[in-house]
Each structure stands twice: as C-alpha cells, then as structure tokens.
Image 1 (spheres, rainbow, N blue to C red):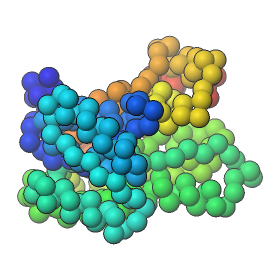
Image 2: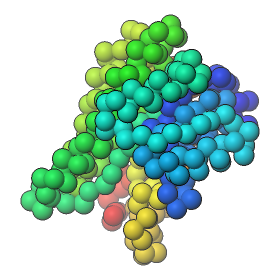
Image 3: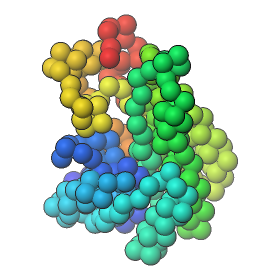
Length: 265
C-alpha cells in the first residue's frame, strides 16, 4: 500500500479533472486517481462522460478507497465552480487538483482549421485556468496550502506536426509557472508533467496498428512502453511531501524520448 511509503497523503482531498477513461482502459487521470486513493486521498472524479467517471470510482472502491464521481463540462465556468462546491460539501476542504483534460491534434498551421484550433485551446487550457481559479482560494482558506498538477506533453518542447496541440501544451507550462510564482507564498505548489508517447485510451481509441505501437515504444531510449500508470505515479510524487521543495517545474516522463533521435509517432 502507498500509505506505508510516507507520502503524507492520508485524508487529503483531491479533485481529478478528467479522471475517467474510455474502453475500460487506464488513462493518465484514472491512474492518478486510483494511486492517490491508494495513498489515502479522498478523490472526486470529474469527467464529461459520467460513465467514465463512475468507472474510476468503482475501481477505487474495489480497493477500499474513498471516491465519488460527477459529470461536468469544465470549459464552462459555472460547471467548474459547481465541482468545487461539490467537493467542499462532501469533505469540507480541498488539498489537491490534478488537471488532465485534453484532446489531440495532428495538423500544421497550414492544414489546421480555425474551428479545431479554437476547440483545442478551449479544452486543453481553459479548464486548467477555471479549475485553478476556484480551487486555489479554498486551498488558501485551509491554511495548509495545496498542490496542483497540470498535464502538459513533450510535444510542447519537441513539436512535430501537432501545431495546435503543441501550442496548447506550451501554454500549460507557462500557466504552471505563473501560478507557482503567484501562489507560492500561500504554500501552494504548482507543477506540470510532460508525458511521452504513453499507451492510453486517448491514443488508441480510434485504433492503432501494432507497427505504430512498436514505433512509439522504440522511440524510448529504454525500449519500453509507457502507460498511464507511469504518469499516475509521477502525480502522486508531485502531490506528496516527497516533493515539498518542488514547484514551477516540468517533470518529463517519457522514457528518454525527448533525448532520442529515433523515429517517433
């Protein structure tokens, strides 16, 4: 059990934005929720798809963790406020916010449409702003600070044909650093994770050939495939007292892909 590792997360309260997952798989948010709950965190799972959120809740409860789930569109300000109201009504405090929401793109600026560019920015950045807007005041009220983890991507620093996605994930990094500076004096730590080509439902929901999966795996210097669990473990670290002296940072979790000149997809 992670409760035995000294993470000091027992009875903390967290919101996992984008904590559901399709195809009964393990996405980054679902993995983080399960592992945080195993470490003793009470977690609210938020997803635009209620079935996905409830699926994560069921997994947590099977492991005797404490969780509940709700559906919300976190691109809408009132919905974000409602989520924070719900967690306060249930547990009376908020210590952790894990922002996972995002969609992909695969076009250059020449090929991208204006509508899809706007959609990517609206989904990949706006929920992080709005959820943080309503979470931070509650963390301050507790007098004990809090922790925010934002999910970016190595595509922010090593782009390749994903212009809208790369720009949005670069924005996540800048937002992370700005919030770390603005709210550090209140004891709030803000960091972001840059996943590499991890194998999650988001990337294989439309189908993925074994050849492409192999290319993604071999892009790693370690020649291993990353998963949502790798990102979830990084989230637990950044939410725990093991990272008490870490804020405003980018934690790259990519098996060395960022350093590799191998083919990648």
